[in-house]
Amino acid sequence: MSAHPTHGAEPIPRYWLYGEPPAVPELRFVHIETIPERMRLYNWEVRPHRHDGLSHALLVTGGGGVLTVDGVEAAFRAPALIVVPAQVVHGFRFDPGTDGHVLTMSEGFLAGVLAAAPEVELREAPALPMAWDLEAGSDEAAALERGFADIRREFRAHHIGRASAISAQVLLLLVATARLAADRRREGGREGGREGRGVSSDLRLLARLRPMIDEEFSRHWPVERYAAALGVTAGRLNAVCRRVTGLSTLQLVHARLMLEARRSLIYTSHGMAEIGYALGFEDPAYFSRFFAKREGRSPQAFRRAHAEGSAGSGLTGGSLAGNGLDRSGGGSPE
Image 1 (cartoon, rainbow, N blue to C red):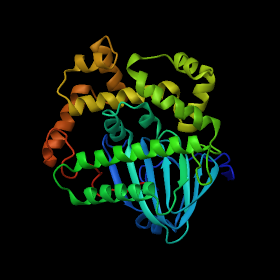
Image 2: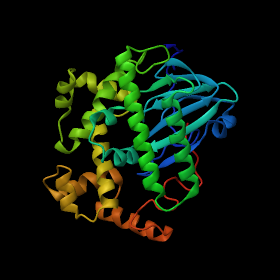
Image 3: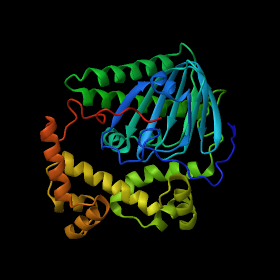
Image 4: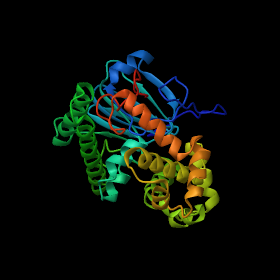
């Protein structure tokens, strides 16, 4: 990886879809398309930006280009696997005619997929940005290509069990990514393995923080405890979080609490007190105030609105049968 010109004093753009105003992604948003489908719209280049709550996984099957992450460049050639976690500043310059797939997933979707996976290595797999060149014709490259193709086929077909099939394929991709990371670490970083090479200390620290928040958010750890567990001061941790994500450490923890609260309100029939207790709130009234302050409506109103919206769309109980995986009419952000 090599140095890239700094962004100066200009703020880093945040997008929902590239070029569109930022928005909160749907809890289980997923989208997949080919690289040419989107890159032809932007002359094969996307300037540095970031998304709130959306992660990317790209499989490059032809061509190549350059990934820019947090001001650092990594060149890649097909076949290659690229992962960009949520909130990380990134951009692309693809060689014209580059082919492959772009998979975009919300943090809510990933949290749901990982909920059934006990291995901590899987939660850590998408935490760091990476660009890995794969060996052409290798088993790992062939398995990844089948996985992305299966997700794209399920995404477009709208068959029964669509959401479950896509979730299962994404879990297999996370397993493949974790195994690739382990292999690269054992090999000491062979040529073409670029996980973490040139990645800033800020991104490394954030990559260690994310799985910790996933484990401890319901315990309501103070920022100082997260900082101590990571071996840094609370001030440094806050500064890193703000610099990389635009949010403080506490705001990241609260965002994870809100994600789990929304999931519980949509996908379970638990009462408000039960949900609040599960999230570490001893007082149900405080949970309701916490939720309403950040959502703009009470937990009951959120659940009611989602249930009414699901009924109107023909979905059952907020499930993702049918068209619920992607925003209607939306494309995949880059």
